[in-house]
Image (cartoon, rainbow, N blue to C red; front, side, top):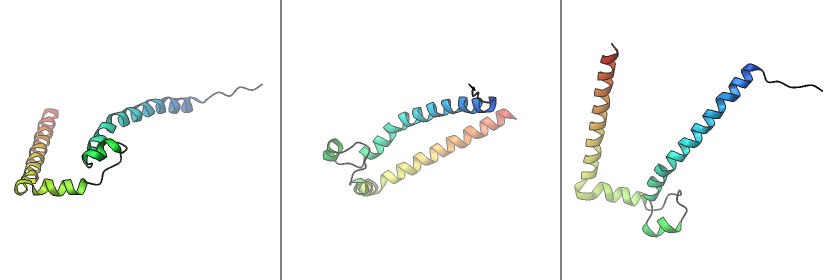
Length: 102
């Protein structure tokens, strides 16, 4: 009777795949609520409770149209403002971190 033993390289590669699989499952678990928020925002009240949760609804483009026309397009102004603040904060954080490394 012959015994089959795994080579050390193969055993290491098999040992590395298990944490990867666990991390992928955890990432999916964390991202499902985010996907639900985006799909729920595209549904009407009736569709929200009568269809499968992760299938987008039919009202998404209407909601975007209404949102962009709200109060003369103020939502787009708010979005641009948030983008400027987030980008500025990221840039300042990068500069401070780079200065600390030097």
